[in-house]
Length: 372
Image (tube, rainbow, N blue to C red):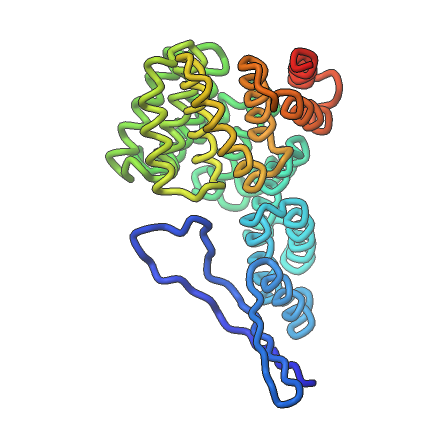
């Protein structure tokens, strides 16, 4: 028996309809096995191929060679794309250590890897650790690149959002205002990144109880994004979704339901089933339907959406937990036989992530009691 392997690059021609599960260009390992005069060929792509290429470069070029480190970075990105966040964190930590040793802790490439590590930690739910790493990157970039550099501002933007996740609003607000002003000067007032930061500021205002101010800000952001990048750009869709949250949180479901339906449809054409923005849009649609006494429709939307959220974001992602608890709540209200299992699943997830005494855990525990 003889086995032959070779690498080649995979690409996808651009077309008008994005793939349902986007697959970026990357390595593919082709393995041909010959035995008894017959040959069979298998191709391996995805994270396995990226990982094999990383380890092959490690052996061929050495651990600190730039080609090896770039291959490791591509591997970590592919792991993030396929939702293997824990393994991505491990790979990014390895790359940060290697780049720090080879280039120095404040080299731009090292800081770029640390920025990616902070994002991966954030997605894993390690918010305190992510905040520490992101703050280190932000302060280092301010020293190395300057306060007005775009990469510095991106680090500050992510740090501000992490502070919101940690409920440290008083720290987040001045930082995000500084970043928004810097982005406007560096990239332009109508640049998508500038407007995305202003969207976060509006969301923060809503969390602080200033909903009218937040609504005005979000409507302005949506209008400007629609004009500059289009109504179905992912950033525009996210801003539209954030505006829906403000309406729904203020009991304006009747006003929100048609906008939620349009948003879900637009996101369905532009994004994959597991994209976070599309999942949020479908969740908002379910909230709007439930708010106008169309509970059965809301349950159907969530029954279709929850598996995609588990697959795309993970079973213990905060958005998945919130969706699962809301699904259980609607089933309990409807007297549906699925209420008990759904409520127990919601409770188990909240206990894993938040612990037994968290308000979300107590809410899920009450749903279990009501479902009996």
